[in-house]
Amino acid sequence: MSGSAVSAMGRPTDPILLQPLLSPLAFQSEYLAKWKSEFSALQTASFAPKAMTNSTASAEPLLAVVAAQTPAPETLLSIAPAQAAVGGQLPEAASQPEPAAAEAKVKKAPPAAAKAAPAEKPGTIATVTGATLTPKKTIAAVASAYTGSAAENGGYAGKDYYGNPLQVGTIAVDPDMIPLGSTVYVTGYSYDGLPVGGMMAKASDIGGAINGNRIDIYVPGSREKAKTFGYQNVTVHVVD
Picture (cartoon, one colour):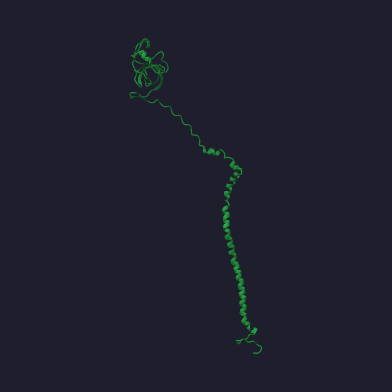
């Protein structure tokens, strides 16, 4: 065994002889170096998205604040006229009023003119005795009083135009205003000796001073007392 190296275990220690034994170790070193290279690349690839994700996540709160503080487009449009007003310059649309046509739409059309009410027919009246009358016409007259003396009756003492005796309810009229022989209802007078509140009368006499809406009412008693009647405004309802 001259010229060869032998180990303590009796195995050869020649490098050439040990090459087969060292080959696996060289392969393992090469594999380990390749594995480290691939692992380093894998770490770089895996950490890059994470770093980007963390950067994006950290930027999200800032983007939210910016979005919250930025007005919407329609808000900016509404703020612009107000800012112009504060600066003393109003937009033309705000400074010019709407045309009067808008007010015309609100106004209602004037109501149609009311039709004239038809003329009322003469109504009925109630006498002091409770009777109901329907006068043909009503006259506002001025009344005086006279007695049955001959001096007041043209020399015919106590007689009316027809020669009938004078009595309470006889009146002298203007025939052009109230036809002779008409039955009337007289109200509005006040005299002691005549029915209170109104009386039925007969237009059966005339007089020289009785013209137009004048009537003369016969009253019993003296001429002196008749003069206290004076002139009174009365209403004469022509019934028949």
